[in-house]
Length: 228
Image 1 (spheres, helix red, strand yellow):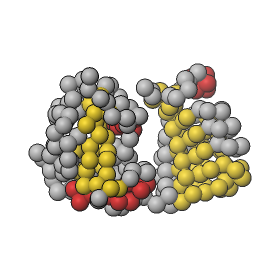
Image 2 (cartoon, one colour; image 1 turned 120 degrees about the vertical axis):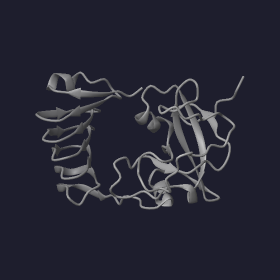
Image 3 (tube, helix red, strand yellow; image 1 turned 30 degrees about the horizontal axis):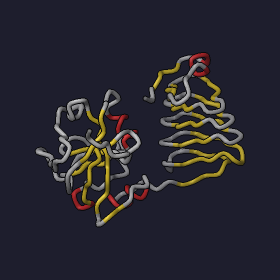
Image 4 (tube, helix red, strand yellow; image 1 turned 90 degrees about the vertical axis):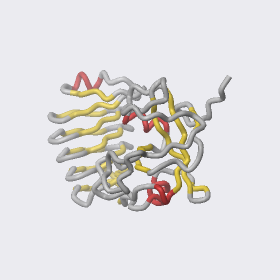
């Protein structure tokens, strides 16, 4: 399971295990090879090799070689020619590199396309991370083979609360419940999904009124779990 580790020194960043994500908030760091770093606030990160850096707040990143940078908010990125930069905010400053301007999805269909979720008969398959007893971290039951509905549906007004929340992949659902042990695949009709907004804090999840059919258990790769 991927871990998010607060980093305060270069030594801690160098000791980061492959697959884990280092969170840096202030100071100067060099990210090498396959390191995955999220830079917040006033952090300054130099990314080399194939390092991957997500820059938020007013973080400053200098990226070279084949590093990959994702720029949010007012991040400042200086990159060499072949660095790929996904720019998610017009407030960010990017100098050099190969820039991909990312448009935030504002409809359920655009959200599905953004995350590579196939649409079949105006329905998508999304995922929920659950505890051993098939309950979410908030206690809501997702019993396999049932169709579930949100008892508190708010008509899609708020991003959080007031509905059922799903991710585009089982592994991504772990972000919202790192202690989860089970995963549920849930068919949801596009018409029952709250339209995402550019101001959303968690663009990698959607909120829905209900599932459009029976839900079923999968493993963290999305493969259906067959009952013995």
